[in-house]
Length: 410
Image (cartoon, rainbow, N blue to C red; front, side, top):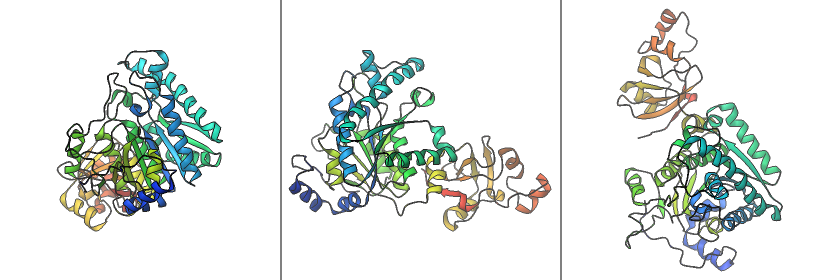
């Protein structure tokens, strides 16, 4: 990682040729990333889009929308993952604070979703663009067929001069609303992997990831992160994302680091920047050194393995012995029943399961060839005994290497 300062130090206006030229000279790495990122996923947080009292900031919505149009006119495909439905609903209903019970939260989100998409559409229509609202739940991304259908919808929306605006379907999803881990950050990373977008931009109300608490004069934004290691994870507590007095925001820096991990592991780049900064997306597209850049970890991962390892939620876990762990991590082998020491959870053939070291730490995910009931009967057994135990041996492998993706989660 690099710990030098990164302030641009010039008035933000990416339309000024001199400013763009300066930005490009200052950071050639960002210049290359910006030039090659023809598909960009932008996630904007609630605190960027709302006033302190929770009402929707229409000027800010317009500013974000106009920057998205600018990116499209720069020959890029753009998807927006937008928070703010609950906040917009709170403002429209004149509530003083975010409700705490699930039913009222879902009702407020339903009111806010319509207001939010209306605001975006009003800002886009003068430019000949349309807002295409897409509401997703985790189930839409866990199921492979639905996952591909989402991708097809997004690609078709581009053809209609529409900007897909994605949000979690808070009105029907139960567990996401009850958690406080910034689900739209993760959703944005999943959409990035779905589209194989080279760049994910997470816009929040902080300048980036700091190496100390932002209130301290000596603290600086970390310009570039080459690897999300334990030291980088430790900085998230130093960089709070303000939830504000009305508790409108669910996210935080920890959820943004997890989103960055998901995207960079798949071979994409991520930038965390201040969404309140004027023309922030234009500056990023120019290669300006603003925010924190998380560099891609190696080459891009194949689409199917992105879904297996980084998107689909595992329905169970397998604990492996040391030999199986080595065969998977170091030799690229398939997983055999003899290498499985125990089975956790109930699942069916074709489900995604997590593969864990003997100490329980996840190292991979894969599509299972056996349901949990049958697998428990053949755990630790050589493949030659499978017919004797089950009466048949439909597969030699519990998980074939072509259906397995290493995750290296710690």
